[in-house]
Length: 121
Image (cartoon, rainbow, N blue to C red):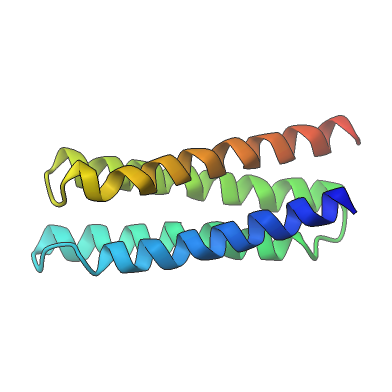
C-alpha cells in the first residue's frame, strides 16, 4: 500500500506541476523568445507526468525504469528552460523560484524511484 500512495503522490504532483508550467508559459512575453521557450517548457513540463502515467502501465520492470527515465530527462530539460527564463530575464526569479524548487523535488523523487526499482530487480 505504501508504494501505491507514492505512485499517486508523484502522478498528482506532476499533473499539478504540468498545469503550473502551462500557466507560467502564458506569462512569458509575446516575443519570438517567449513563444519558442514557452512551447519548449510546456512540452517538457507536461511530458514529465505523461511519461509517469505511461510507466504505471509498463509491461515489465525494465519498461517501467525506461519510462521513468524519460520522465527524469524531461524534468531535467524543464529545469534547463526555467534557468533560461531566469537568465534571459524573461520573468523575474521570484516568479520562477517555486517552479525551480518543485522541479528539483520531482527530479529527486524520480531518481529515487528509478534507483529503488533497479535495486529490487
